[in-house]
Image 1 (cartoon, rainbow, N blue to C red):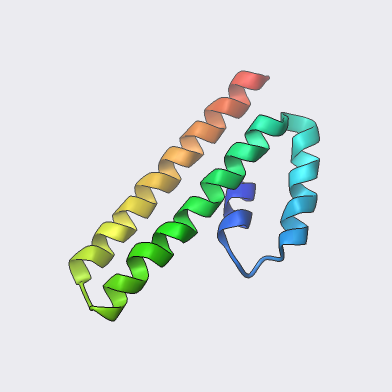
Image 2: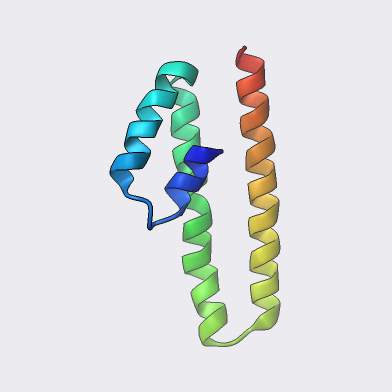
Length: 89
């Protein structure tokens, strides 16, 4: 989950996330690291696509739906990653 958050937050330097991904890849394997990269970039893309439009046009319903979608996505990603890691050991 740390890699998902690392890929999601643009303030964190990508070099630090890449170093951590290399460490995690040695432990968990390449497919899991690839999945976390994809899961990490999705929320930011969703915010850019829907959040900016909702703020500029001031559509509170769309903002609430965006927050709900992000919450559901993060909970699902956490569940998926937890199950993948636990099944691997």
